Image 1 (cartoon, one colour):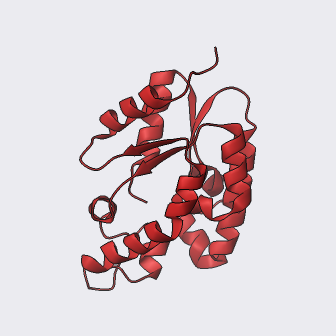
Image 2 (spheres, rainbow, N blue to C red):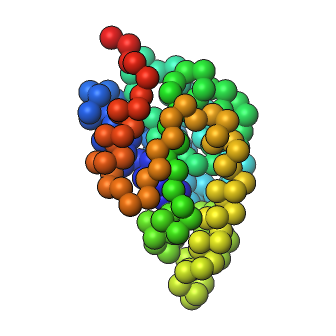
Image 3 (cartoon, rainbow, N blue to C red):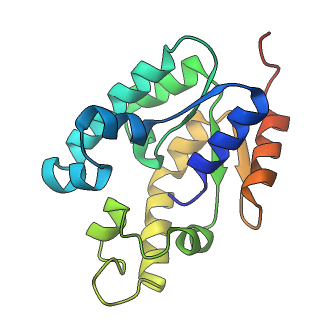
Amino acid sequence: MGAGKSSVAKDVAAQLGWAVADTDDVVEHEAGMTVAHMFADLGEEAFRDAEAGAIQHLSVSAGPVVVSVGGGAVLRPENRVAMGERGTVVWLRARPGTLAARVGRGEKRPLLARAGTGAGDGTGGGRGLVKVLAGLSAERRHLYEEVADVVVDVDELTVAQVARLVVARLPALPG
């Protein structure tokens, strides 16, 4: 969350001449509601189910595609298997402070809003936001390490710089 997955995916896809997809966009289209509303109305488990469906669908799409996958997708083993078996997985790694600076107050980030990190709670986020993001990173780090084929540290880099590094570090591509 805040690593730049969606923006970097668009830039990488443009450099490669591939299609681009974002699992959150797929979920929103299929559900007819935003991810934030889905979390609020149906709960995180319903979102994670829809996200897993999107990953499965996109992993068997025709033609090459760069897929931006939400940071919590790694929590489900079936998602890690689908991503690992059907593509090159890139982990955009960032320090919690960098992530906090990029997500702002987190109003559109259900996990941050629910944790009371400044999204309308009058606290302005700050250290609480960094703490929540650090906790999420710590919880998921071993899963990212398990599935990632390529790791790019994104702190201090622009989207264009990260995208160039991703393309440069990809294994030989077909065709």
